[in-house]
Length: 206
Ligand SMILES: Cc1ncc(COP(=O)(O)OP(=O)(O)O)c(N)n1
Ligand SMILES: Cc1nc(C(=O)O)sc1CCOP(=O)(O)O
Ligand SMILES: [Mg+2]
Image (cartoon, rainbow, N blue to C red; front, side, top):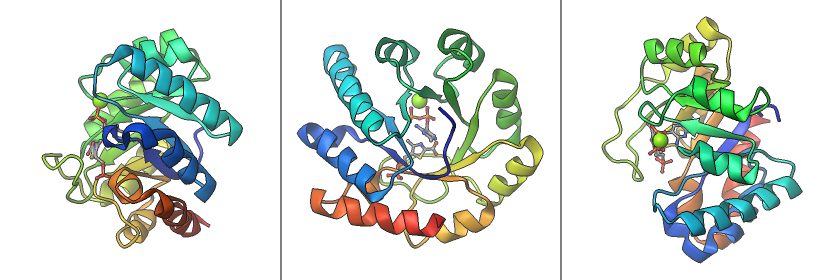
């Protein structure tokens, strides 16, 4: 599956039993891509949730990426993985997942990291944190200008992450972001608000 442009929603452990309903609401609102991010280490629950999310994403014809975990992506046949700087080799992940998998790489605020990610076979480059993040308060900050620089230099889709909301999103789109990766401003809301908020982002891309 090809890397789409648009809102990239990332799941949050705190969703609990609402995980599937929350992701479905985001898909109904037009989310372009979903990442399953679960730091619990609960193998059986992760496998079961990832399976269910993949079936849901298939219904909406949207890719599901798995955060950190190539084994889990392979086990369920996910569309790809997102790997950070300490999550293992991109090249090894490509080798295991094959040429059609979507591989995303964290680049923080560094074009040097981005060059390494390109070398490792990344399909997109993620930069952040663009703004203070409630989900990851200690995240290293990046200047939105790096989005445009990376796009021109590497010719790959660029993803912005960290503290994004519908007020600051236009600045990131103007800077060249192909995707906006969001946790709190989507999944930190009551379930009935998720669809509408996702739709507001989607309109920014139209
Ligand atoms: C789209 C996207 N960009 C960046 C990250 C962060 O990945 P990482 O640095 O590995 O941190 P964790 O998410 O694993 O805490 C991401 N997950 N997705
Ligand atoms: C998971 C993650 N990675 C970041 C990075 O900068 O690499 S910021 C972040 C948290 C994003 O969540 P929110 O939209 O709630 O700020
Ligand atoms: Mg990681």
